[in-house]
Structure formats: structure tokens, C-alpha cells
Length: 262
Image 1: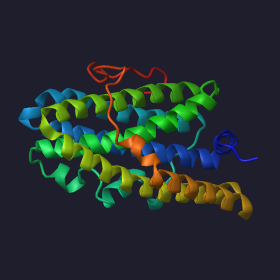
Image 2 (image 1 turned 135 degrees about the vertical axis):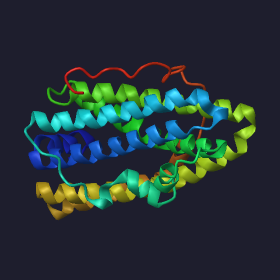
Image 3 (image 1 turned 90 degrees about the vertical axis):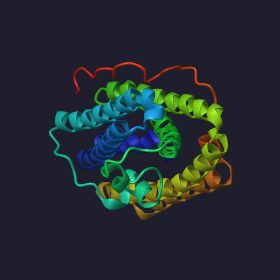
């Protein structure tokens, strides 16, 4: 019987699929680190207090990338080339979600509207990251190879999500509520399409590496499409709601160290 646990066990236990999994994850985290560092450098004067928090967010993402590279090194595996159709971060940009590389490379200070775009994009994608890492933590928190890394990254992702809620609520109180809700909705509806397509691509690449029979690959693809249908109908709403987080000022300090990894 197919289950999330058995699927990931199969991926983690095979060198080629583990190599691709860690390489995809490391690439996305490194890209997020770069983007947050640029945004922190370009934050407008009106939002200057956000600068250190955005920089902390970027430092966490860089740390996660190093953790995934450390997991590869532990198994004596070199990083794999990341297929374009599995590059979640770049595909989000290509679909107009978040701030473009051209905008971040220009060196021009960002506007408050840009900061709202960044935070809305982060609120949606960090929801996805938090859910994925909680799932991995549930199944593999005690795994001898990846357990400690999964717990560490999961905690950071929960912090990032809390930070997005808190800052968007602050901006809503300052009069940006309608823009925030509109931007969140646009981001969420676009993200679920990209996530579906990336999930299908990742499973196709994993299936080729692991030699999955056609019925198994078809069943997994059907499950991904069914999840998309649910998200398109109603599930996207969880990505646009805002509430005061239990973790307050979650990115107000220095990044947590990752001894043994990075």
C-alpha cells in the first residue's frame, strides 16, 4: 500500500533518489537565502526594522542548504544537477510570484508594496514548507541519518511562518489589508499550480531512478492531481488566512546554530 512514509523511506534508502532529493532541497534553500539577503539590503526606510528579520530568514535558508549538502557528504554523494521542472523556486518566479531576480539585482530600494509582495509570497510558500517538514518530522524525526536535520529545519520553517503572519498583520493594521488579501490570494492560487507541476516532475524523476512500475507511477500522479483539485476548490484558503502566531518575534534574534551540519 502506498503511503507518504513508505514513499519517502524508499527515496531515502536509495543513493540516487536521496542524492536528487537533497540536491533539489539544497538548491531551493540556497536560492531563498540569496533572495532574502537581497531584500534585506534593499528594504525601504519606512520598513527598516524588518531588515534584520529578513536577513535572519535568509541566513536560516542558507543554513538549510548547507545541511542538505552535509547529508549528501555524509553518504559520500556529490550534488546532482537539478532538473528545471523540479526547481520550485525558479518556477514560482517564472509564474510571476514574488519579486523577480531582475528587481532584486537592480539595486533600487524596494517599496512598501514590494515588501507586501515579498511577505505574501513568503506566507504562502512557508505554509507549504512548514507542512512538508512537519510531515517529515512526524515520520522521520528519529531516523538515524536525517532525523536531527528534519527537526532543525522544521522548527525554522515554523518560525518563518509565524514571522510572516505577524508582519502581515502589522501591515494590515497600517491600512494595507485589501492589498495583502488580494496579493495572498493571487500567490496561493498560482503556487498550488506550480506545486502540482513540480510534484509530478519530482515523482517522475524518482520513478525513473527507482524503477517504479507504471501502475505505481500512475497512482502517485493521480494522488497529486487529486490534492491539487482539493487545493483549487478549498485548500488554498489555509494559505491566505492570517492569525496572531503563538511564536512572537520569531525572527528577532540570531539564527540557531546547526552543530554537526553547518
